Amino acid sequence: MTARDFVPPTNDLAALAAASLTCKGCHLWEHATQTVFGEGPPGARVVLVGEQPGDKEDLAGEPFVGPAGGLLDRALADAGIDRSMTYVTNIVKHFKWTPRGKRRIHQKPNATEIKACWPWLEAEVAAIKPDIVVCLGATAAQGVLGRQFKVTQRRGEILESPHGWRVTATVHPSSILRADDARRQLEYEAFVRDLQAVAPLLA
Ligand code: URA
Ligand code: SF4
Image (cartoon, rainbow, N blue to C red):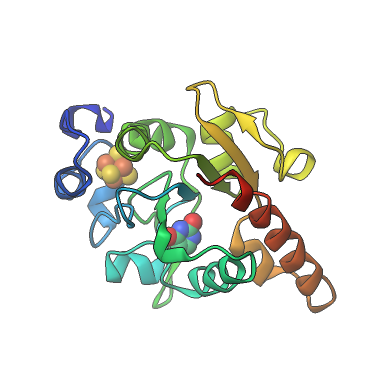
């Protein structure tokens, strides 16, 4: 099973988003509230790709609206990029979680789930034709650039993906939130620098 059977043959983002709501391309839809499709203008020059929706995103039905999203907003602004001009999405569109008491703890999507959900990202990028795709964190970066790709070694480089997309990769905003106090500001500044490298590429 993959999302392939659920993706309509269209470059209309609204139609893709609507179709994604009924996707059963892997089992992740079963325990999630809803599909969290990408969001942003069809003419966006930058596509930002995270891992998967978190708890807040699952409930809101929108990507990056929780704590990681807050940090992403601030970093984009500091890099001189207006978030409302970007298209923000995830490599996996349903929240994967495990219960711990009353909380839902995020679980990393596995290779099968990433592969199953891939047709949606492919359709989003085909519809938007951005100048660059920015992968946030290793899950997105490895999904787009291959399992061997190492964000720590190659962050901020401008690359071409096997599908011919112009791509760059940086850390996931959550990793900055998790960093200890001594590291957090440095990590944040490095993240902003990676995002700044994207600005001159925008048509
Ligand atoms: N983390 C992600 O990778 N994506 C979101 O949408 C929110 C948090
Ligand atoms: Fe479909 Fe992706 Fe959700 Fe799996 S995670 S059901 S492939 S939208």
